[in-house]
Length: 486
Length: 95
Image 1 (spheres, rainbow over the protein chains, first blue to last red):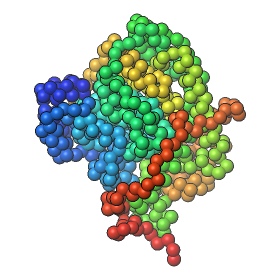
Image 2: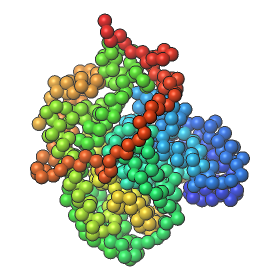
Image 3: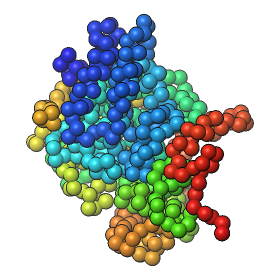
Image 4: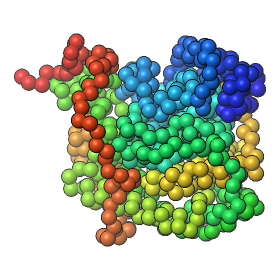
């Protein structure tokens, strides 16, 4: 049984398929791990009674169909789960119990998976350290004082601590890839439209995408296959045949052209990040790829563009939290308007307020052209940069983050310093293209650092295959001693 | 362009978010520094650039014009902080 701490999602799926282990045994194992890991605060909600019941029901089945047979999984608390509390990390949704299931989680359960619980995240996915959650900080298993990244910080923490064999997150500006980088795990942001947004608590609708977070690349392909697919309930869902990412996964780098964008060599980047990037370039060369120096000239403008577009969309999306239909309602206020104002004043945390205010400002009369329209134009230039590059290269290699995991409180006083964390991940969301972060190595303190592979729209298979090759050569091992169990 | 406290007060009103004086002060500072940061975009000439309105190249798909209220009234009302059998209840609007 203790092997389950080493097994990957794919291995556990095979063990259950060949009846070497039951779903109930696996489920009980992960429940035990979760119960011993309260210190990490990775979970907002657990639903073990349901998990055990579902596992028992699964074990009674004669036929094992589906990609995730009897696999217990925890998911980010941004996915609506029917009859299970969904908070988005916010006080305003502290007691919200959805009457419906998100399409992406529904896909997981249809493939045989079983829910373990809901994972902590930054409030409405707005943050890069999980410190904006109403439900407290989530700890990075790498070290007691380290943030797990964000916004899918609970997901990354639970995965690295093996409280779930794999998980899913959402990525609006780096919220899957940055926490994956900080915890030595694999995270993929799919092409915009590949995974349905229906039933995900909305943050910035033109940027939000759900994606897999896993222990290795093979698991990532499997989980992406399980969660993706056309959904008529999402008007921006891409209508195309489902890909078989697992079956088509192979080490395949020979003859590929990999672009290295010069704009990603930023000032003051730690030497160690530069080193793992160069190591990644060497691996690709040795595996038969051609390295091409490229330019993405508008890279520096991606973050300012993002911090207009994302808050603008957020201010509109978050208008629904009014204390009437669901969620928290303030007891203060003499009339309807005051009730709204007090509900939102008391129900939203500081970062959410910042973004709603910025968003309202840039969309308001007299400022719309100067900010929002300007940002949409620059977004076009950023997308053009990538379109031009992908005429010359098959994929792009960059670091995932400009630093390894930082300490709690280190960046909370200055919003801009927190935003700068997403400097390498945000351009991809603006262009709507896919990217994966894989562990590239550790720094002198033993903290993981990630490498990012970017592809053109709908070319997930190419970066999965390159990532598989690199993963083998890098041979990364997380040295986590399960200190939280004492 | 910079933002002052009175503008933040106005934006807070538009956003329906109550702010006490302490929060108004510190959020005004935050907002000013964020706006300064995003105003880097003004360095770029975008006169001949068409704005990117949607990342997905597709038009909305029509569906059958059929009423579907989900028939889950009770489940929907369950989450409301104040309701009766059929309605959400809000503070008095009309005197």
